Length: 70
Image (cartoon, rainbow, N blue to C red; front, side):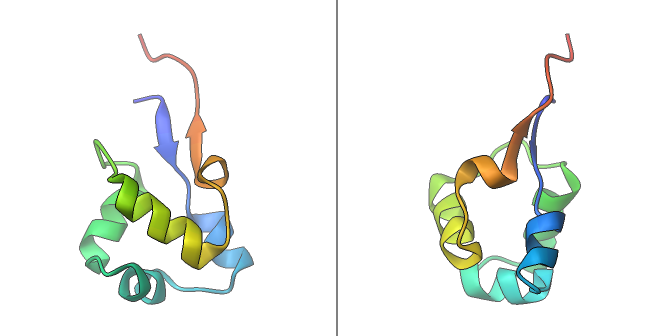
């Protein structure tokens, strides 16, 4: 897949752990791990909204497009 969720850098910049973010956005650490690892097939807008709110960022800061795999 050529669209990826990149949370590592912004979590480090905000000095927040994955566990803290998972608690704030009310998802399991396992589901957040799936997002962070790039294995997620989709993300709910509600979840994206919560992530952006708690990390004080824009969707473009955590979603990247790396080109077409085809």
